[in-house]
Amino acid sequence: RLLKPLKAKSGKYILQIREFENEQSFFDQFKLLAIDHSVNTKIDVSPTTGEIYQYVTPFRLSRAFVRSKNVLSELAEFDSTRIIVNPGDTLSLSLQQYLGKDIGALNRTVSPSSIQSLPGGGEGGGDGLPKVQKMAVNTQPSEKSTSDGVMTFRQRPTLVFVPMTLDSLTSWNLVWTQRARLDYLNFGLLVSHPYQTNELSLVSAKHSAQIDLKASLLSIDSNYAMLSPGESIELQFQSIPSPPSGKKRTFVLVSRGRYERLTDSSRFNAYSQPEVSSFGLNTIYPNPFNPITTISFQLPVDGYTQVIIYDLLGREVARLIDGNFSKGSYTVNWDASNQSSGISSKGGYASGVYFCRFIVSNSAVGGKVLYNEVKKLIVT
Image 1: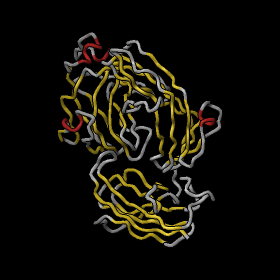
Image 2: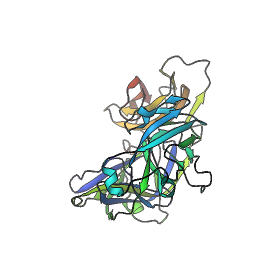
Image 3: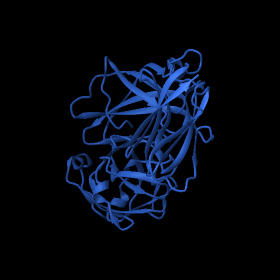
Image 4: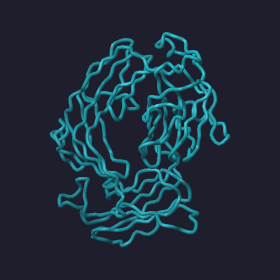
């Protein structure tokens, strides 16, 4: 599910797919679904089965505690006001019915005693470091399927709906199994209102290396398009008329393929320091270089970290780091023989002057910049 609705430009919906995480992705097919549904409902999709969930959120959090701290104001809205949860933390929550537009879609009042018999799920917003298969587990009821209540986030801000059941509106506990930043929690109830799904035609698909990928992404045929960290694919789909009155549109991007975690030390390394007390883009060695140099950087606090290479014209040519990092010291290699931006036609970056930018923010989206430094590199 896309967090924001798409706006048509010249009859096309345009999406950019970028590999932000430390993974190498292999895509076999992309599809874009436009789902027109009631203005009073929400839509999400199962990441494993592709099942469409239509639900309403007639509740609001009335109590939220973690480690004896009241975090209700931080989790009430999906608004980038986040808390940090660590492995073993238990979020103790209570819900109350909310007299808003969602009640009209539900057509009934929910009593505390009836919640157990109603199909629903947890709605959560946040981001995690790193991406894992299981982030949080619902501890009620005691007898549940192995898939009930498992909530996952990616490294970028994510809003997910996960089918689960509750014993009580006043006692909902989530046990966190990985470190994450949590922005929002709520509970939704599934509804069976009619909706219309439109599969949109793929018009073009172009890699940031100026490679036409449309033929590779039209069907499932094991003809994969590869995407590495810092690279992107621009997808253009044919637009359709606006939804009818009383309906709104949710977009769902469907991808088929696989990914591989990059654990090779050539990607980046953390190394021990007695104590990191300041930000810094430290040594770049060798410099000048050809074709590989090592860039070291440090941060005294956790933060959203980027290491980006630009050419003399200010164009981004490589994104080496883009994600949440814990405080510490790190190194990352830049291989100038592995060109992915289309700047040079010889398979690598052209000789000349480049700039390395190191920037740390307190949030991935719209966060305050904590540190920003630029250094010059020379490829011989």
